[in-house]
Image (cartoon, rainbow, N blue to C red; front, top):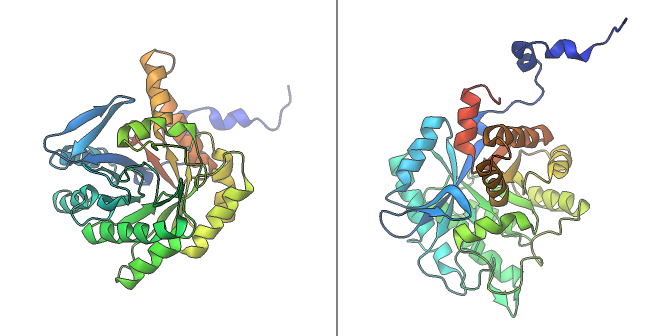
Length: 327
């Protein structure tokens, strides 16, 4: 048969396939989300996320070193305080769990890039992401506390802050307080497109942050909406976001791509706890190859337009890259 164009020519060897690969993945793009808890000598496995742990500050260094050895140089801290109140005061306390974690990590593992998740849900007694007014979150009163939280994290050693609350105007509030205190070079990675998703279930178990009543649909986004996602990302960039994020990652590749095409800042995506738990459960039963599926999920996120990939599989992906299974 006389075929002039044969796409299979470029698939004929591994060397050639890698040479013409359109999507490339690098260890420097990976961020590992890590849970830090009060107490001593704590390394507690999270039941719904096998292989993931809550670490006390005196035990977190072992995980940070493990990540560094694998080539993962960025981590995002989530704090689990020993006490909560209606205002989430331990989120912005100078001796809060996350603040102490940043201080110690800066001393112990100076090569690690430290990112602070800025939210209230882990710290409030009601589990919502801000100050309540009746049964709803008071957006504008919450902004002040989010800004205080971000500033306290940066003062403690955070290299970047990542507001995940989905309050209107929080990026601008955080930018103003950081600039006013001399942190003009500290970037903000905004959870710009964060959907009210069923994929978050295991995280709420890990962080003990499930709402005591109702849900978060008055501030997290309706997953039916596309135009709203583009609007949210544009608003955050206008307020000063240096990076925007789409969360979750796996089911939202269409929006990763659209946002990548519509903004002129880097785009992150977060492969969330439910994605991790689903892979672990299926792999445990022998229904799929864990290695192959995590590589495929990551490659799809990067193909869609991800520049920064936040994942509980960061170490495993880095090891897969080292072995040439993805990259």
